[in-house]
Amino acid sequence: DWLAATVLSAGLAAFLYEVSPTGGHDLAPAGRWIVAGPAVVFGIGICIACARGVRGPPRGALLGIAAGISFGVAAVLTKALVHYLGGGVFAWVDHWEPYALAVTSIGGVVIAQSALQTGALGAAVGASEAMIPITAAALGLGLLDEGIDARGVGWAILAISAVAILWSIVRLARSEDYLLDASAASGLLLEPNG
Image (tube, rainbow, N blue to C red):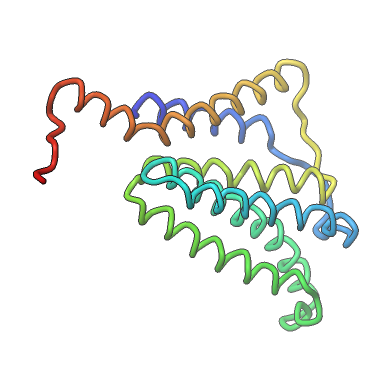
């Protein structure tokens, strides 16, 4: 678990260092949100649906991924809210993004709490914290026309960091399985009385 947590931290650090989006706009055209919105909802829904059939760390990781996606979307929507606030305290009222921000933020908190209730904190927190910047960066690139300054080796570092993050999330999600296998192998797992 310590190795997976270390690799996850290093992978996230490398990803954030290399991705560092630049430029772009504060608001995304509605047509792009019409494509991205259902894709995001589908991704969150798939994670939640898959989490219903499993327990422990895998459930925590799946719900953590869903929460991270929700919080990543909230980060992009926050940029729109701040843009509207530049026009006055109530300039945001007649735009949809602040309301979507409320839904994604509250939904993310509810999903994150469900992930934490699994008791698999490493899997839940690791998956959530990894997905927030990945989702925000992907949406920033796709919706807000942000750019990445990565060149040559930078793209290789991004690919390696993405693989490291994915491996770490999977490893943390399977950590309880390894503990149960080790306990059974050492004879520490007792059969319940019947």
